[in-house]
Length: 541
Image (cartoon, rainbow, N blue to C red; front, side, top):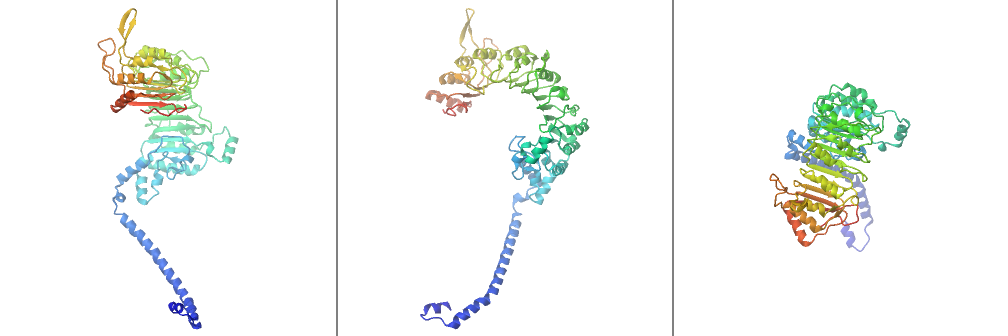
């Protein structure tokens, strides 16, 4: 039809155009019908294709994993990627990591999310009790009823597994303005939900590792479980920040398996009743001089004691002398000028192997160390001092009295303050056997710290790079006996040397070759510049 009209030079006949329009109007219904038919066929084919793909996927091995293997994969998916305990629930809004304030940890999928994928996964996830034995609970004022119901289901699926639970007070900063107004107007009134602790208390026989904040409203529920904690081994107690805390805690005094206790914030020694005689590890905050000594005295089986943020005594401290035969690790830390030396002076610790002391910049961390070691005659192998760098003469004198030391850490957070590490200390630590004259007689000077394996230092230095390399080489290749007595043994390798200074250390080419050789042979070396100092960030060699 159309080619004929296009090729001729005359106008088309009138009846031809009329016929064309008539045919077009007549075909519209049929065209629409055919379009609908084709669209329906496309939808049918898409559904058919999806069905065939699903049927084909059923032949894949990964889809047909045994439930035991799938449960192991789920366990891996439920491992937190971070150890941060107190990130707020709003920081874990990523899908699958937090549901109504219930989570396992940052980066960990919850079994609730895994069970929402498909029926097969739901069967495995809801039947694997090991997935439900670890839990963090953010207790706030929102969705309390939903959270309570979900917590009840969660713990029921744990069956009889030992439970590791952290109960965290939700940060008030994440509440809306109305909540803030109401909470401020009701200050001093405990509004924490009791239902959460009631559900937890019903599973107290499964408690293994519990981290709790303790508002007043939970006193009655905790009283009921006093004689019902057969498996509790680790316990952390925290004061409540947004609500009044319990004044005294006695619910855990009869836990027969309790060995590890942390007391954080607020609570003093007399505020907490525990089975002190069986504890192996104690960590506490804000104890004063007397409480520190009494705590160690109350725990004859203690192996590790960590006392942080020590506080000055309001009343004169009691004159207490403590002889403890089991304590192996002692950590004392304070932000104020508390007399740590007075605490050390009251202790005799014949089993002490590790001592960590941390003081503010105006304090002294060294004075009580040597008297403690001499009095205790302990096999101290690790010493860590955090604070201003001690005077070098005092440091050498102290280290001379600790020949058993294997690990030494001297960390000055303000690297340009305090004393300075110079060539004097390096020479005495080098395996040189230099002679010295005492009372007119010549004696060969023994190597300082002959058993030293790791040395980490942060602070100012006063030695040259060549002297440092000479020291490292001498301790990596111990070629002679140390000490004056025949029973002395050869100095071992210094395996690790890490130093952070205020300025870059530049090595000569020959010294750089020696350092490369030491590193290739297994010595760990790290020379860094403090990040707060305006210098190059790290030494290259």
